[in-house]
Length: 199
Image (cartoon, rainbow, N blue to C red; front, side):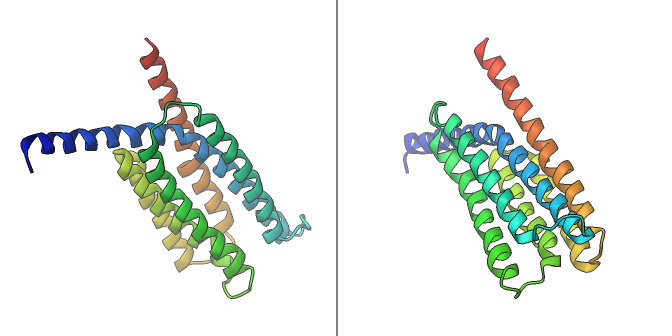
């Protein structure tokens, strides 16, 4: 490898890091969208368990998934008009797509078939989300975002070790504090970057 090749590789890595940081800031909208969809699903599940909601949890979660998917489609469509930064978007998108597919398999096939206990769904979901948050924060070079994964994993460990009626409220609190709020922060960060870039 020549010195010029090494410099080209370093420049490519630098562009990749800048790319993933841009995509992560933009993806704050996805955090908020899926956070709200998840909170709705948790609320309807809580209502069903309390006898105040007649719609079965699996049906309710299907509706929440459709809502989140539709909002995601609109976000992707809007962001497709921005200057293309394809590779970073592909990396972070692949992380969340793989997590989403795993979550759908666990919920609709594992829990839906009765082979997995639905009471473990919050702990399983928190474990998967923690992994996706860790990878996103690592790729973006954002230590604070990466470190949120440890809170997700701690919550999952507690729910696995001591299952009980507190699980749904705890999950809702985690979604709000570790998903929606960081998403709003990422949106705000992106807006500040756009303002600074326009000056």
